[in-house]
Image (cartoon, rainbow, N blue to C red; front, side, top):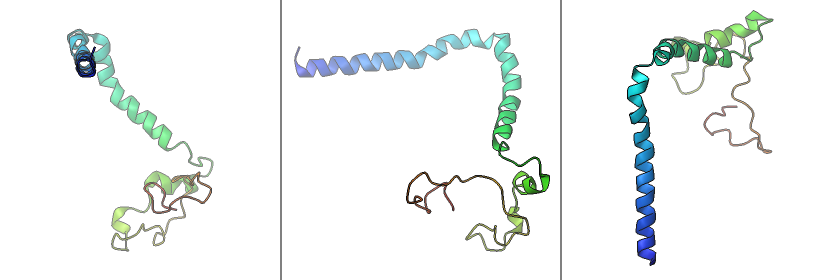
Length: 122
């Protein structure tokens, strides 16, 4: 088999497999629409996902000392309390105590990482 025919055959096989894998969920869709399990899950999953996200987000709060946890719960400071004009985070101008949240995590890099990178504001 020549190189050209080999490449054409490989691309055609990949296209057929890709098309088949993308079409497969639609063949099962008719059976799923009539399912009572899917009806049950569609009614309860959004609330369940939000409860899991809430528990995950609040997992590191110091619940033994509610006053220390309050700024994280309330997402202090509120946007309307910002006095800096939006140029910098307003944690310095806030009357609330400093956050006890471990976010953003410290950089695993030995030099502390780039402090201007997304997700690391320390």
